[in-house]
Amino acid sequence: MTGSDARALAQHLVQRSDDALTALFAARHVSPTASWSDAFDAAEALLDPSSIERTLRGLTSSEISALTDSVPAADDGVRSRLQELALVDEEGAVYDAVSSALAALTTAPMPGAGLGLDEQEGTDAEARPDDAGAAERAFSSLGSLGDILHAALTHPFGRIGSGTLGAADRRRLIEDGIVDDAAAADELVVIAERTGLLSGREKTWLVTTRGSQWLHSDTIARWTEVAAALVEGLPRGLRRPAGGWLPPAAWTRAYPLDALWPERATNLRALLRRWGVLDETDRPTSWARDTFLDDASAPFSSAALDALSRLLPSEVDRVYLQNDLTAIAPGPLSPHLDMRLRSMARRESRAQASSYRFTTESIADALTAGESAESLRAFLTELSLTGLPQPLAYEIERTSRTHGMVRVGPDDEGRTRVWSDDEALLRTLAVDQALRPLGLVPDGDGLVTRSGADTAFWMIADARYPVVAVDADGERRRLDRHRLAPTPTEPSPDRDTYAALLARLRAAPTDDADAAWLGRELDHAVKARATIIVAVRMPDGTEREFTIEATGLGGGRLRGLDRTVDVERTLPVSSISGIRAL
Image (cartoon, rainbow, N blue to C red; front, top):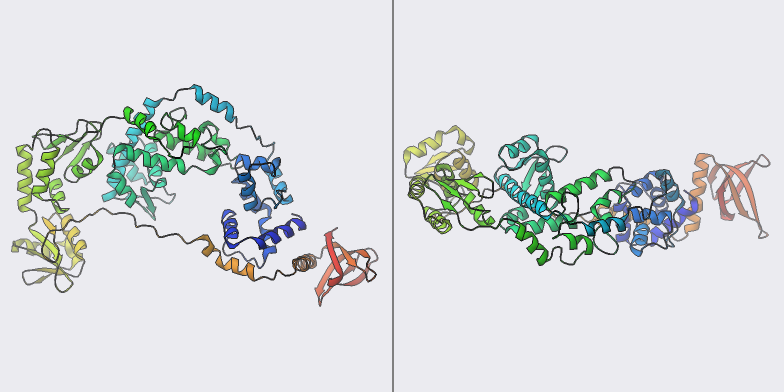
């Protein structure tokens, strides 16, 4: 690092706005607790080789090519990015420290055209993607991801320290037939997280509000929402200046200095293959091709989505209800109907012709969640192609007769009251060890607890009692047990993060930058007892140089041993016009 570079950068930093400095510090991963006292400290730290090396590893191929060849001749966006990162000055000249760090990282010239984009694009243009295979994977992934989210609604998945799915939950997904293998489970969870459908919080994967809404949307809307988010979330180094994205085969060379990038690029392609955006040979599918090559304003056109829709199995909105208490969907059931049916029946098979089984427990769960015998019969009658079978109608009626014998709701004193017409059942509740945490105590014709009504309701329901929730007026109310991820709070702006550092830099005097820089250089020389060449303005207007081993600085004077004549000299700082290393 040359002193002139650090000095020039410091002067430029002073001229930047707080927002621009904040963006620079965030991009360069500056610690908010950095002990910088002025812009010179900041400039020296930003031009430190280790800081520059970390930044260079995150540069794209075009940005590295600009640093190697000619920044002023580079694309405006590339040039602005390099200036924002404080790697070049205002004229586009590369700082010496940056050139040195780049030379140390590169053992061969960076190939500006080495990506072979034109050749790769020509290959893609001539080859036809395997749309049928990609559509089959897309359909399979849609169903599997829907099942994963549905399972996580009631039983959130474990999240291990590395941020991935826990082994037990991965095994459960495979055993339940939701995914074929561990790779599919991991990739679908990553897709769900990247698109905001799942949220990893501490040791748990939770469905987000967006994920819950996604479950109720139709198949094409589901696919499009996830695909658009995946494509939009691709790193900036994969975007072409003219629009669209680099051919996937060229992705591994988008960040040439990042040793971890090729593996990351491979993983990104795997996610897009899993979702049917790329085919098995990493060519964009017909419905994704325009998005990749043209960067259309709409991520996926209606014509492209129609092409995908024609390759997917058609959704159905009716099922066959059978006497053995099962329901058979002759094709993929519309998502909103599937969600409602799952609330009252257990899904058994996950093929295109899915099957569901009604049990006493599943019907009781639906009644507990707020359904009634009437609403169940109405929904199933409308859904069925074969009417409502007598065995199923009987099971609904029988279960509903006993259900609701226990009622849970608030009382006038702010407590939760549990009551029933069956006194024996109340006595059983009072002594049930599973309900002991509620602290149920007799009160008149019922039991009371200080626990909330929802907590008491779900504990009693989990103990398999026929319970319903009611409001203050005794009317039944529907409860949703689904545990969703909390809505994230707005992250603190980086400007707040760096507020203290910015305030300290702004408070530093900037009236005489030349004098401040000279004082700083002299102080460093004294601390290092360095031998320097000092230029001094003489009274007659001439300038004379002294080779000095700096030994002290104070009272406006520099003290040191003149190596030329081997005598001690004291030079007034006000007369020093510059210094340089020997």
